[in-house]
Each structure stands twice: as C-alpha cells, then as structure tokens.
Image (cartoon, rainbow, N blue to C red; front, side, top):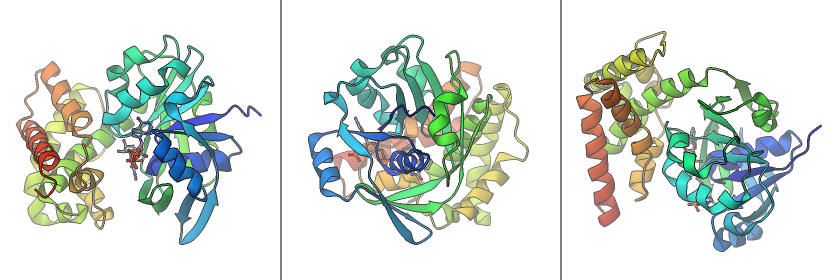
Amino acid sequence: MDVERVYVLGAGAIGARMAVAALDAGWPVTLLLKSAESLRTFERSNGIEFDVAREQRIVRPDAEIAHSGTAPLGRLLIAVKAQQTRSALSSIRHRLSPSSRIVFLQNGMGVVEWVEDLLPPGATVVLGTTTEAVWRRGPFSLVHAARGETWFGPAPDRPGDPDSAQPLLNAPGLKAGWDPDIRERLWLKLAMNCAINPLTALLGCRNGVLAAADSAALLDPICREAEIVLTAEGIPYATPLVDQARALACETGANRSSMLQDVLTGRQTEIEHITGYLVDRAAQLGIPVPFNAFLLQAMRIRQASVADDPSA
Ligand SMILES: NC(=O)c1ccc[n+]([C@@H]2O[C@H](COP(=O)([O-])OP(=O)(O)OC[C@H]3O[C@@H](n4cnc5c(N)ncnc54)[C@H](OP(=O)(O)O)[C@@H]3O)[C@@H](O)[C@H]2O)c1
C-alpha cells in the first residue's frame, strides 16, 4: 500500500475531520498550520479531539507551520475557507511540484481558477464537496454533528484521478465516492448555499426559519434564478430547487449556517465564492439574477459593517 504522507492545509472543522479519516485509513497525516502560535496550541493539546455519536476519540497527526516546512507536498488536502485559499496556498507554494496531488474540499466554486497561477503546471487537481457537518468546540476539538456524503472528482482542464483522493475514498466512517462529473454536485451544493447562507446571515436566524411557509416567498426567487443558471450550465436537477432548499432548511433546522456564524464572529464569509460566483456566471451568460445580486451586495455591506464595528 502507498503510505505517502497526506498534508492538510486548513486544520479547522472539515480539515481536521478529514485528517481523522485519513489516519483511520492508515495514512500518515501532517497538519499544515498557519502560525507558530497555532503549532504551540496544537502541541499543548492532546491531538484532535473528535466527538462522534457522544463518544470522544483522540487522534494525533503530526503538525508543522505551513510556510516554514520544506518537505515536498506530494498529497495535499486544502480545507481552508474559500476566501482564505490564496494566502494559504501562497504560503506553501515553494513545496508544490508538477507531481503534487491537490484536493480542494470547500464550499463555493471558482476557487481553482482564482488560484491557478499558484498551482504548478501539470499538478493533479481534484475537487470535493461534502455534506458532513462538523463544528469546532475549540482549536483541534471537533463535534461531528451529522454524517454526510463526500464526493470527489476531477477539476476542469486539469489531470485528476481517483488515486488523488484515495486516503479519503476508503476511509472507515466516511461515506465517500468518486464522481467523474463532480461539477453537477458542486453546482447543486452551490445553489443550496446561495439559497440558505446569505438569507440566514442577513436575517440572523437558524436554518429552520427558512422552512416555514412564509419564508417560501424569499427562497423562491433566489432558487428560480439559480435554476435558470444551472439549466444554462447544463446541470440537471430532479426537483425544484426551492423544494430542495426548504427540505434542507428543515433537515438542518437547528443549525446556524457557516455564513451566519462568520458574520456573528466578525469573520469574512464565503459570499464571494458562493453567491458571487453565481452572479458572475449569470452575467457571463447574460442571465439577470437581481435577487441574488441584491443578496450579494447586502452581504458585502453586512460583512463590512461587522468588520468596522463588531457590535453591529
Ligand atoms: N464545517 C462544516 O460542517 C462544513 C461542511 C461542509 C462544507 N464545509 C466547507 O469546508 C471548508 C472549511 O470549512 P470549516 O468549517 O472547516 O472552516 P474552519 O473551521 O474555519 O477551518 C478553516 C481552517 O483553515 C485555517 N487557515 C486559515 N488560513 C490558513 C492559512 N493561511 N494557513 C493554514 N491554515 C489556515 C483556519 O485557521 P484559523 O482558525 O487559525 O484561522 C482554520 O483552522 C469551507 O469551504 C466550508 O464552507 C464545512
């Protein structure tokens, strides 16, 4: 068996959860941390605390500061928030080569295109999407809130093969698969994020509020616009997106969306890579999407006001 090391850039909720999965599958794992302070915090901890089904496990990957390491990164999993990708990738660029296998596991779309100039020519690039739900109780301390599915597939115009995602494809406890047409799954996830994330962040409500009958009037035009863009992109959807969004809001009713959490904690959100991507693609295709454009602008203003005044 290939026991090449797996490097994880972005050891937050999803990155650390995937580090646990790769370790469970027998792969050596190194977390690439942002700073000496993060490394000190990790060294003082027991390792990754992972609460799953009310039982706590502790696993101990290796860890190092991303920018100061020198070992080549053969297998890299990127799980920083979409907007953090450029600066995170810049910090390890000197460790990448055309033989690197790079997996992006994030919400949002268009990230690979955005960081294309930082990727070595010819490197294998795989895109992933997950419905696992994980939250961080503290640094390196995770709660597995819901089991989901994780899918990987090739990035457009780049070599990509299932071997790149191998450490996660057969990991025990992770339901994962390879989909050569990953674009469809990415678009459908993007559409759900466009429906739920900005509204919950702007309204300051849990997801379940959007499942109520009077919220349909808000979700409906957002989803109808997304349907027109998906159709133009050749992406099929089995049921109307508004029904899918309401079902998801109901299923995850008690959750605060990641965008709401980011606003509440004064952090930048993934809005530019979620609604921003949809609005950009719509403009390129000549499709008017006024409701999504409104949400994008409202979120930009909300984000800026929180950054200027955290009590806003
Ligand atoms: N959590 C979920 O349940 C879930 C589910 C589906 C999809 N997703 C998606 O998965 C992606 C990751 O989300 P998340 O919830 O795991 O976010 P997160 O908990 O905020 O994790 C991001 C991690 O990246 C680290 N980071 C930021 N900049 C870095 C840098 N320059 N170098 C190294 N590390 C850096 C952050 O460190 P600091 O905290 O020190 O800044 C943090 O540990 C997002 O696209 C999200 O939408 C998440």
